[in-house]
Length: 278
Image (cartoon, rainbow, N blue to C red):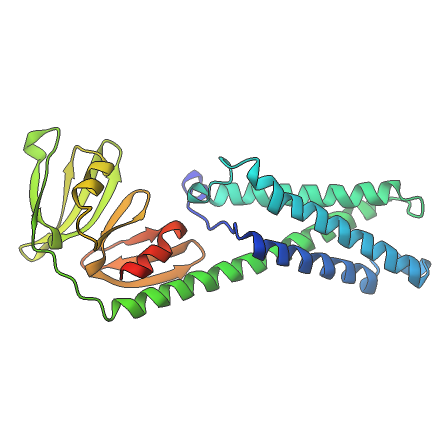
């Protein structure tokens, strides 16, 4: 369970898009209250119903705007998109739900024309869930579409890519016996593994993995003159000559590298640069 909660999860930090979504949700929630009358609106005049629906829309807009546009700048460490995972996404949506529900509750509690009954509290929570559900669906659809489009763009560029790299590079390990010399083009992926780097390379007709006690920064520096060796993630270097295809999904863009049996993640920060390189 803990492993599942720590899985990477896409976080939408597009402020312009979030502002549009917040406005859209506010209008939907206000319209929902006006037309479906969950709080016995039929007891009020049309003008009163319009005012109440508008106030609820303003509350929704204010609370979500603060959480999605203002608050992230104050809790940057928590909102780090590179470290966002399922657990944080759950906590974030629970917080959004609670804050929106509290906004509604305060309005209904202190508005003299309403008498809050226990079942009304349940209605407030359900309306809050309705608002947050719209938010989650819209953001997930947008991120899915964005990741798929980015993957398609990468695939189109991959079809016309041709690079070579027959130079040898020597990876010197702190344990001399682990040092290794490889042709650059034999390298498929280099992964950071704590105090080691994992080098995946294709040689003599088979895929191999070699551990070198060294830093990821050292490997990146060693290969900096080969523009087809690209850092696509904070823990991965990839040989773009051997990228077969890209896949876009809920957890972002991942690439399939020739001869490897696992997908390599691509951070959003590196998508544009990767498109330029390939």
